[in-house]
Amino acid sequence: MEKNAEKIWTNCLKIIKDIVEWQHYKTWFEPIKPVSLKNSVLVIQVPSQFFFEYLEEHYVNLLAKTLKRELGKEGRLEYRIMVDSGNKNTQPLMMDIPGHGYKMYPNNEMDFPLIINNPVKNPFVIPGLKKVQIDPQLNPIYIFDSFIEGDCNRVARRAGKTVAEKPGANSFNPLVIYGGVGLGKTHLAQAIGNEVKRTNPTKVVLYVSSEKFINQFMDHSRNNAINDFIHFYQLIDVLIVDDVQFFAKAEKSQDALFAIFNHLHQSGKQLILTTDKPPKDLEGVQERLLSRFRWGLSADLQIPDYDTRIEILERKMKNDGLEMPKEVVKYIAYNISNNVRELEGALISLLAQSSLNRREIDLDLAKKVLRNFVKSSSKEITIDTIQKMVCDFFDVPYDKLLQKTRKREIVQARQITMYLSKAFTKNSLKTIGEHFGGRDHTTVIHSCQTVKDLMDTDGVFRENVLELQQKVQLAAM
Image (tube, rainbow, N blue to C red; front, side):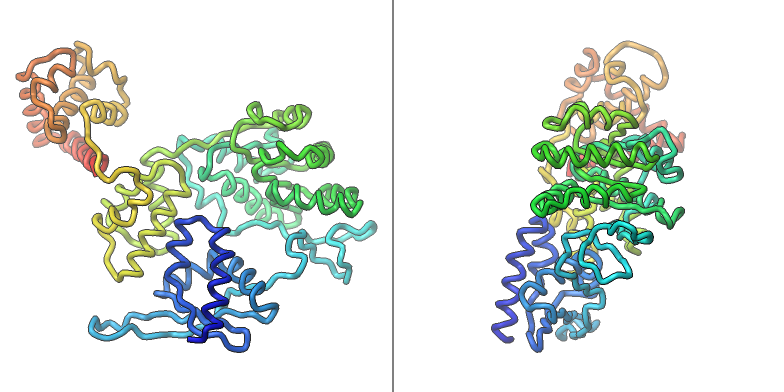
């Protein structure tokens, strides 16, 4: 291997490491090995076809930029893929293919790319120019079909559909989507933009991060071209501004956004904003801007519940043509509950490790791979934990199980809780009985027998108990 190849790749990794998340860097870039460098073509070895396809789909832009920086405009990337020969006693075969998705960017890549039939370097509108095409800066994978609806996001998703159907001509203007990290704010906002472009191709749509907006404003301010900057944004029919909380320390940029907001809103254009908290809690943002944010609808995205997480994983697997044991999917969904981004990241890491190690995905591999995602691989299950699960499952109040009542749904929920507590906790029958309002051990024995009898005679009851049993098992992993 040429030393130059190793040096170039090491330099590329230094840049990449500062950009991508640590877990993604460990999964997708550490396994890559530089092979050779000839005529500005760097050949890298990747472990599998799956790796190659994932890199080309998700990191081609990043690879292009870093390689261009190291090798200049002529820099290109080729892959050497390890292919399983089908014989465990022989070395894997190697297959070389070029990076088909490789893209190079112009020097002004930080500007908005305007496609105009005129050799003018100014990226903004020239007075008198009637026809201008603006790249919407949208990711085509962000669509409504891949945004799973649940109780956690129903209002926001349906409001987004309404906006996409009638941009600017609805009462949700602006539409402010807010929520924590990784809950799908960018996905939903871009899904609206993609849907508008699909149904109204003539509409001018633009997605821009607050950071990019602020940086461009500063550049044009230094060049005394603020009017051009504002004029450009006044062309937009649907403007999507991501993470507006970052305007907090950019007073001048807020002035520009205020002028743009007023013009677009008064012209019947649509504004979509995302933020990590509701507008009333945004600190450092001008009150006049906040008052305008409140003109339309503020819709929140919450942490998805267990069933929604299952559906998200199954939809992603279906879209990617992947299969995985149901118990593994449930394990991931139960243990990764913070946000959708972590959920998908855990799935991808598991698939990557399966590909690297040439091993079938099972629960043991899932536990091993996800230890960086799961806080604790072994949890002590308590009577209280099981009681909460049962109450959530049957939608009954938590405290009702502790009271003396003969209502059938309460009695059965209490009996199932006792049955599962006996099976999954180290508590004695006496302790379990005392937890439920001071009942004795004979009540627990009777409850457990009743549950067993009903499971033998009632199919629906049996399915409910088995599903709850699986939930408790997953919680104990």
